Picture (tube, rainbow, N blue to C red):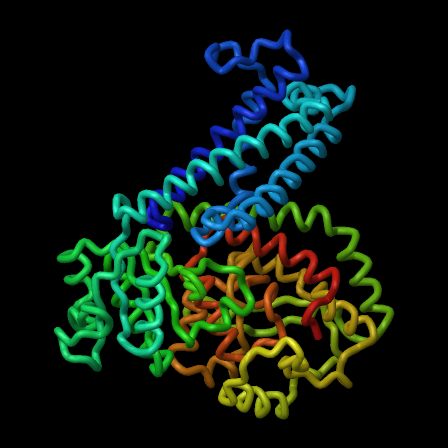
Amino acid sequence: MKRYPPYKYILALLDWILINIAFIVALKFHSPEMDVFPLYFPFITLEVLFFLGYAVGIILIFQHHCLYRINVFLTVSDQVMGISRALFQAAVGFALLSFFTESRMEGIFHIVDRLIVDSRLTILYFALISFGLLLFFRVFLFRNLFLFLTKNHLYYRSLLIIGAGRTGKSVAANLRSKNPYGLQVIGFLDDKKPVGSIIFKGLKVLGKVSDAPYIVDEHHIDEILVCLDNVSHPSFLEVIGVCLKTRALIKIASPLYEIIPTLISIERYGNVPVVAVSNSTPNTLQRIFKRVFDLFFTSLALLLLAPVLVIIAIAIKIDSRGPVLFKQTRIGKNGKPFQFYKFRSMYVGSDKDETRKQRYEIFIHEKKNYNPRQKSTKIIDESRITRVGRFIRKTSLDELPQLINVLKGDMSLVGPRPCLPYEWERYEDWHKKRLSVTPGCTGVWQVSGRSRVGFEDMVILDLFYIHNAWWLLDLQLILKTIPVMIFGKGGK
């Protein structure tokens, strides 16, 4: 529950209620004789009971379209566009469910068919009514009420800024001049400024960074915004570690993380992009859920992709001499080695490439920034790639055998990519934090910049995932991986 501020949960609950009301009204419009009025809860139809669950899925679609980000729900045009896209997808999804279950088949499909409305007109009514209700309550009521409460200081969230440099002052100035977000800056923490020094219009340095837990409790801080300039990555991560010991919500607005807003749509305070950092360590139940999530989707993928796997295996065998699968030692969670599987895409013996090792060391230390126009940063000798290999590498089909690694528990569906032993040896300590979790088949950098991202940017994207990992983000990344594979974006 600490992942988001309370108003986001309130807004999500309001959306869920409005969506269900819209569906019930749509049923009444289409079938006036049906007893679906909400006052008679015991007599609500099976269709309505099913939709109560489907409405939760619609809330997840809303989340995907950023409708709970403060800069989105405070902007009328962004809200209208987001609601339109989300409801269109929800209506299409419901229509597809209705279409595929509308059959005369006996058994489970017959039971499911009774739960899903098969009227296209009802779905259309639902889309129109829900759009009107959401527009009225979200845009004209909730938004204006929120702005009224924040303007009159009836609702506010206390904010502590870490870093009294250029970025910290800029954020404080932005929030002082225009602040519809209900954020009240309490002060700064900085190791380079004396305690008590005034930084911006009466706002003072309250202490050192190490004082964060004490300051948060003393001043009842709701949110910490890390705005450090001119600091090394290891020092920056140490600061994040201190902040994670507090009960406050943590966000980052720092040049060190500028790759994230460049590639990922995130929340903004005015013109300042802020990156959320979850202050909750996955517990046993969450780890079990992630494992069940991995096993379910991996088993489903292997079942559906079985014909594709057979075709690729035959093509590799016909194209060049050697085994179908390529096995290699990779480094996984906390530096533990494991046997890694891929479809062979190169000629036999191509893994013994000393030149690549030298080029990789240069790649780590050159600190190249992301540029969408630059050539791929992936280090590979293309003369060693087979004809079939060229295609399966471009579309990432060569990665499919890693589903075996997921079943074995060496990898997860989503997470940082595992590295080679000689790469691990060249990592700095802060680089190794990217493998503090189980490595994955896909991740943030694969669906964002992929092989056009420099090494340190890749590490930062992996750290962003680690700080924000939860099942919904995993599902979003899996869905985003599909078009990346189809169109071969960034592949090499």
